[in-house]
Length: 387
Figure 1: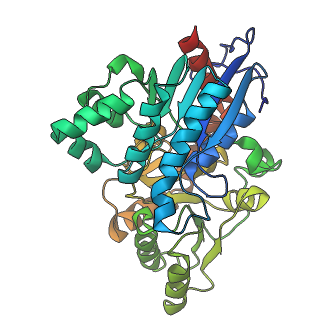
Figure 2: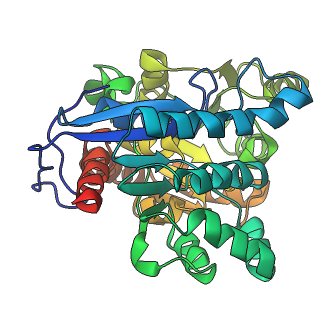
């Protein structure tokens, strides 16, 4: 796949990616039929690579059709053999892996990276998208786990993480500090639709509207947000809440909204994308994601910022690197209904601060986090490593 334009280093918008010599990259990617932040990141990156870079996807991991336990056990071995076959029959200069610090993923992707040593790659790049701190701590406390981790992942030429805390944990596990770089995820401005610029910053919903966008799992804080919303309605009777996203808790949340009698105030549209998603951002006043999930940096936060929304989120993973408390929104120290209510009430009572935060977010997101800027950095790093 060869698409995209000239790119520059992240934080240095004037530096262009060299395009003299073609560069080939093999990207390990999840099945595109499965939703998730990694897939969204890779789609955005591939769409914005320069014409001098050829990227090929090798699908690894779970498939929607995998149901029998035996097939799920054999799947990593089969993918590993496919990786070796691809590496030798159609060589690429760079291997880009996208593991997660999660129990199943860390073993599976460690197997792939160990196998990659038998390939003919000039550089191996690892991008950790998810991170579970307890797992990293457990690996660090066990000498044999730490040795296995270093064997599998220590051969990477460059490692991207989404938080300085994640970087320090990798260094503690024996990774070379100079090879570990803190970066961020990206949003694809084109996916927000052609109306993103014209709609952002022009709220058409009155009274105020809150927006949650994420996977419907308990760790994302959707139940706590709903409890906080009930408390907020006492001070803001006309307040509305949109709970966007799909997942195992969707029907449970819809049923709870019914039991609470909030059908006219809380709306659960399910999974949304494209212009529908852009309109939800544009017609809302505050984006709320009180997650305790082991996040890197959720793409929805970057999209909300790009559409001029202040952000209320938790101090998890790479979120504090993007959302500065009091400037781009508010960070809550502990996820709970009362703490969420307190922060939202303060913001809803200060519309001038909301407008200022929204304007700052929109400028910051398009300058630093849009796919063009981040892909610049990624491609420049590829070329630096192979040179």
